[in-house]
Length: 521
Figure (cartoon, rainbow, N blue to C red):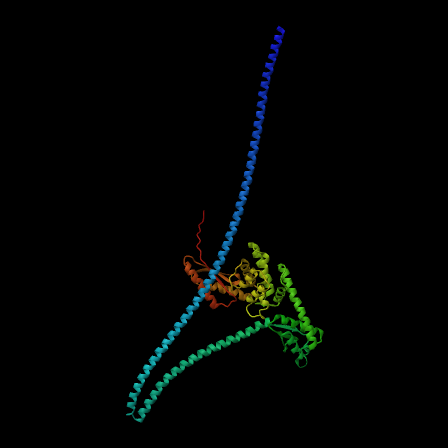
């Protein structure tokens, strides 16, 4: 029994000790788990903070990028609005110049009317004075007749002679005045006649360079063969080609005259082929003319296709290709119109690419802007009107039609492409060497432009730019106000119109600005 109690007590002690040890172990294990949980939580918090920082940086970068893009868009819009504002300013300046010109013309007309009224008033006053004098003379004559009745023969003769002498003096004075007026009129007529002769001679020189072609012959005997029996060969050539043949004393040469360059080319190739072949008679002439016409047509089409391919505008209507080829034989102030059109196409394309417009469409408009010149000698109207009709007939884009209509400023541009084509046209035509004008005359014209501008009171300096198409005038801001600047521009414009002879138009831009400067030391 006692042993059993001891065992029971020992067992209870062991159980208590085991329970206590288990409790201690559970507390220890719980603390370690809690520590691990805390460490894991801290690690998760740290990772979350890193991820949040990373997300924050990413969001910040995206926000900065969005801000940069918005800034670029805003700057682009500002540039576009500035460009539109400049275009509007230029239009306003042109309108103001037109109004100034009209105002000047009205002033001149009003001045002429005033002068005519003054002349009429003077003539009326002169007639009234003459009537008064005539009345007085009649009274005097009546008195003299009464006196003459009592005069002797010698006294009457002396009186008549004196009276005739007085009347003749008046008539002589009137005659001198009339002769002076006749002399002035004759001088004006003579001057106009001399000027017209000079213009005619100069026009002949210029026209001969643009409306004739020369065909070289192996010998002068060939002239007779070209003329043919009783002139039948030359008549056949002229009838089939529409070109006049001039066979004169010029050695070994025949001159072809005609305003249509394509007809002249056909006639030139025909005569060269006939001379080379040696068989010259009406039947052979007809065959060669027909063959040459086909060759020239192919040449024209090849030239048009080369231009389209060179510019790179894709497909184009075959009729337009042929019209482009015809421009190869057309010149403007000595500049080949086809090369000018290709140059305009490239310039317009580059300008369009710079401002984000359709480059291909700009090239197309630049290439076709002078298409009307291909047939302007065959169709009524200006080359602009003809070009618009051709473009509409072939359903060209609106921007192309607008460029054709507005490239000379006859109509306001409605599209950006039209503005770019007008700028490219001016650049191609105005660059030095593009058109027939000697370097000496070109430099002299620029010097005269600057000289006229600098001679105006208040002008500080003047610069001729854009090959003489524009003159920039810098005025002294302390001496010239804004209103005076407009007057200076008008005065310079009027003086240029009076003193200079120039093709196209010259833009006068007066700049007035105030600059404040200081030096930091």
